[in-house]
Image 1: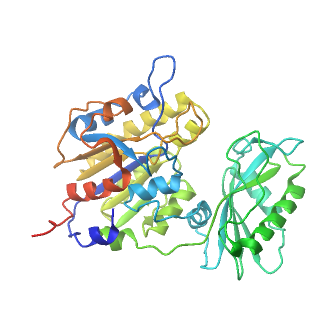
Image 2: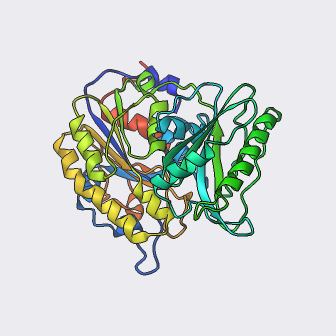
Image 3: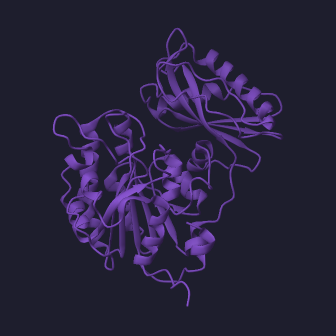
Length: 401
């Protein structure tokens, strides 16, 4: 979708939109009964919305492409994820409220576990508690690098933030996270000739961190992803004329929301608390993004049963949402994370849209196989969802004479 084009068609209205993103919601059938996590879950309220709304499967980036969480969400918000690219480091920084400067380079770090041969055996160090993360970050804060300021901050659980501040820095570095166990961490390497200075600084940081953490367990090493500088993009208010609020407990999604100009609301960790926040702020905003993280976390852990329970927990909150009388509801995910794969996948994601003006299809259940025959189609580009949402909210003018 071309943002300049859609911006010219925006008209004012007082309609309310709620977008619920169950992170990594898409799954694969398990052998026992051939059902995915979403198809297994008892979801009478989501099924009722599906029966009254229009459904389909959406493609976050492109066919066969496995998306990260950043691209997956950007597409849902109407930003072409191929054109609008940002690293996880920037999102992590903004997510914890770090004052990121234009010249800063940020990276998302994982505390991980390596064996005696330096091979990664756990990319998340057992998802160490945040309290342990704080202790380890305090150790890393003692690392000094020549010519730059070094910032190390806790994000959550096994994740932390590294920011380098100084002149002549570049975000054009590959990840050091191999993205799988059984391999050694990758050496920092630049993607452009301008990245040489930054590569050397990161290499020195990793070497010192390895020494500091060698006697720690299970977090005895670090991995980096998403080296990047902060981009300057048009906000959702500028493009869509929406007063947007984000309800997300996890820092990265709060960061992405801030990058797009959303008001990030303080909320609790539990799904019920997120819906409490929605109710408490209902009169203040006209677009709400509500993010649910644990569907993705349990998918990555290979925990089919717990992923099902999170979906069911969201379903139980739907009557509260309906009680607020929103004009448009959209329920989907940013990508698929099948527990069978324990990782993000390329599979299209179920999407459900309900409004007073939608043209209902024959789908009666919110699930992968049911949605494939829905009115939105079997593979609608995710960037096309936002215009459909705006149209159903009566926020788009007619195009042409």
